[in-house]
Amino acid sequence: MFNYKHYIPILRWKAAEKEALGKLGKEEKELITPLIELIMPQPEYMVKDGEDTRIKSPEELLNESIEMFKSKVKEIPNEIAKFWGIAPAFVDLSLIDFSLRIDGVGRIMELGEELKLCLVPVVGLSSIPELKKISNVCNKKYKHGLCLRLFRNDFEKASFQDNIKDFLTEYELSEDDVDIVIDFQITDSKCLEMGNYVGKLPDISRWRTLTVVSGTFPKDLSQLSPDMHFIDRSDFIYWVNQVNSDGLSRKPAFGDYTIQHPIFIEPAPGANPSASIRYTTNDKWLIMRGLALRGEIKGIKSPGHAQYPLLARLLTEQKEFFGADFSYGDGYISEMANIDTKKTGNPRTWLRAGINHHLACTISQVSSLS
Image (cartoon, rainbow, N blue to C red; front, side):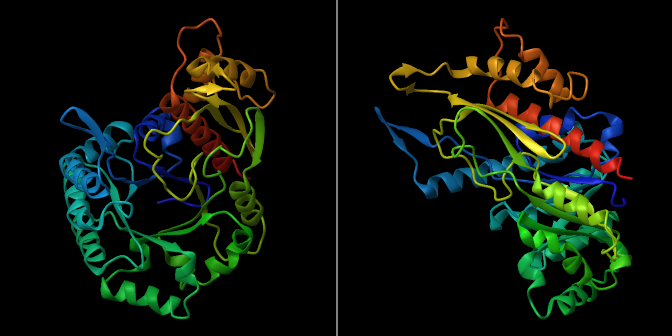
């Protein structure tokens, strides 16, 4: 499917991520394969109880979320067709409730085939046998292959290579049916040992594709003061340094979690985020962090969403800004930098702009490697 000059962004299938993906150009889309992580819908956490309002119990929230996913699952292939198209995409249900995964993957793959989508189900060595079985049934039926997502703990087992071979044997697969994704999740010094992990894979040259993924972006911005900050893109820097060396038996493609933390946690109900812009440069993230959108700061009411145009104007004045024509996200930032505009955007639209710019930036970097 692709070589190492290809980009695999891991995208949670939420509004900002879908829209950011959909704003890419046709040529950009040819240079990436998204790994779509489906997530549970989030119901309203408050409910009217007579004349009073109460917080729903965890059990109520889970049951409502499950019912919402059941009713929504048929829409997912249509959304993928709308925002991505018919090119290959990996689909991962590991963040979905256990009770929904088996029926979910079968239904999504079936509906995707009706739309002529090329959806590749994602499994792990530790996935329940029923999920691996139905995913492979879809592979055999639709001929799109399987994606095997491996984590650090998989490699730490003495039986790792035997587990890989057993997986292939049990499901009557050959290596060229399987896309390998090695997911370090949080970037750390172990990512500098990428060659050791890649080298543990049996028959390294035979797998259909090989990708290494990690993420550096912080869990949230609460540790940053309202100001302009730079954070190293260690995930990308580590990968570039190693694929440019001669120490790899096979060069893997690059994957990351865009401008999101690798470990998914839903925002707490009623969260009060700051007005902030996340912007990717060649080797860093530039964070424009404002104040909380609601409440008071030292007795003064927060300027709220009105902060966004001011932050955008400041960003466009930095030498790191790529220019309004670089991507949809850059065009949005440039448009909103007009401090006289009545438009301000909101956390969703600014995350959409930031992710779209990150995708465009990383696609350009990865595909243009010498």
